[in-house]
Length: 263
Image (cartoon, rainbow, N blue to C red; front, side, top):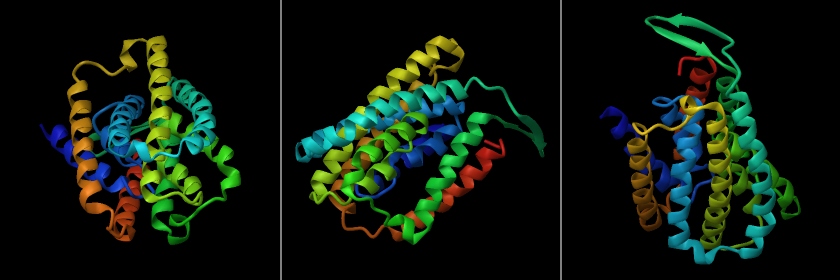
């Protein structure tokens, strides 16, 4: 029951806040899901929640999406997402580096934990440092931005913050920004979910999402839908500085714990 409560609360808050913020739903949910699932399964689970949430956002604001921008940024993102998702499958097969005891708990350090912990750490810094919060790239770098966002989206789900940094200077309305973000995010999610499924099948059922975990994923999806509706109605005028500081601190702590093998 604790897992359901934690995932429900985390999903509804994260989904509402990320509708208009620079950080992504997957960035916030991955650490939560990693508390209950093996890390590679946590990445796949957050991909499913993120895809369902993006589809729901498309239904709410998708008509405002900039189609040319979706193609210009989305196509390289899709191509790179294949590579990122395949890389996750490759790294997840590496054995443990070391293990040690922390009180009554046994910590296990693996390459996949170190890799994703490093990414979480970097994105935490983006939330904590004011200069990096407002980082934006010229529109001429959209192709490169699509590749980077797609790759990291495929590997760990960290695509929203990078995508926002590249799309923030293209001169579209907030509604078009949200709609375009949702469409591109959904495209990347479909690619990486398919790639994860193939990788899990190749590895055997031990690494796949099993039937006992689907209710937790469904809980996250329902809560994320609710968060979108709340965010659309109430949160678009909210100042994000304090929220980003809290989020960055949370991610920083998770990155350290994950890299040390405690999670």
